Amino acid sequence: MKTFQDLFRRYRRPGDFFIALLSLLFALFLLVNLPTQAPMVDNVGFFSQPAFWPGVAVISMVIFSALHLFGALVSERIPGRMEEVLAWFKATEFAAWFMAYVWVVPIMGYLPATLVFTVLLTLRLGYRGWRWLLAAAGFGLVVVLLFKGFLNVRIPAGEVYQYLPSGPVRSFFMTYL
Image 1 (cartoon, one colour):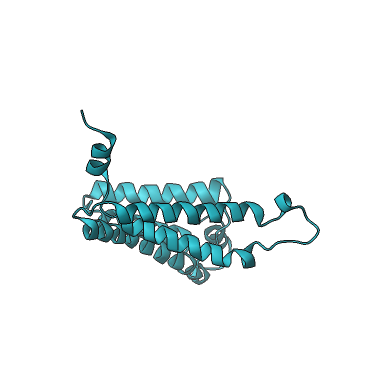
Image 2: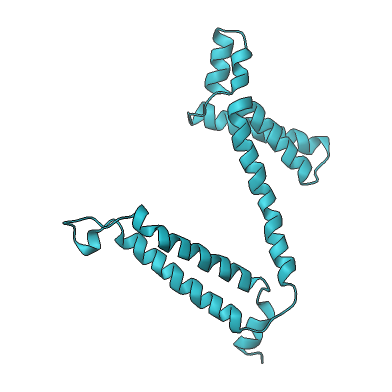
């Protein structure tokens, strides 16, 4: 019968040390910046301070991140750590796609940017058939109609909409698309 330690060793991830270190560094960053972000206020009880619960959360994060790092330091090394770290960094590509989308929406407009990015991401993921591209464009159209038309989410109109003929067409595009 296998012990808990045998199971722990078998299923432990090799990037554990790296994520523990990042977690501790982020927690320490939050702790250093806590006094400027959530200051203590005069004439307010200790538990009513705006900084009390954020302080509890950040201090707990520092303690548990330090314990996690300690556990990662004393555990045996297994191969594959850098491969896992590289896999994490590969995922940041999609954060870059999102940041590009956020940057392009005020220029192109919500509808064109959403259609372009849904199709480009579909291609990036390896789906090349016309059905997949049509499904991506349809999804983008539904998202825009849902958010701008049905939910009335206020998203600034794109700069390209200024080149449309003035009147009801431009007004419709700026309001709903």
